[in-house]
Image (cartoon, rainbow, N blue to C red; front, top):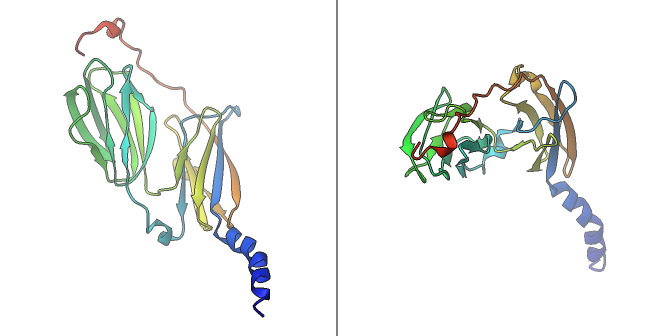
Length: 219
């Protein structure tokens, strides 16, 4: 009988490993002309609340470089804090009037003493009182499972449990409702689910950089 144990283990081990293997959602986001869409946030929300038990907020950072928010779109998990380091040789005045988070960081250089807590899901639009063209977005997700598309329109949410998820997409230029993008997908252990989303996008509205602002000494 004992001689069979190694054989049984060798037979069952691959099946056990597969049963515990994490799953993946690979999303491709394109516009109405099938062009890839960068900076789209893809969120997967489990229908099983227990998968959130070990989720923890994180300490995040959103930079200011060359008088722009970098990255322009930053997804974070609800309850996370975000620092806003200023890498420019001018001061910035960061603020948001969005319902998901209203805050203000008066004129400062370097790193503010306290990061900002984002404790409510939703989209937070960022601005700078001094440089009107500086626009950024923080997407506060109620789920810890999210990713942002790259220049090819691809985003991968890895290390997912084998569960049913509702997947949706948001982009700052989308004209439709985020809820209308929802897809339901049930993942088997070790499975990769490939999803494609097509978004209708409005033209980007940008305030032109002020002429000569690069030469400003203190603002």
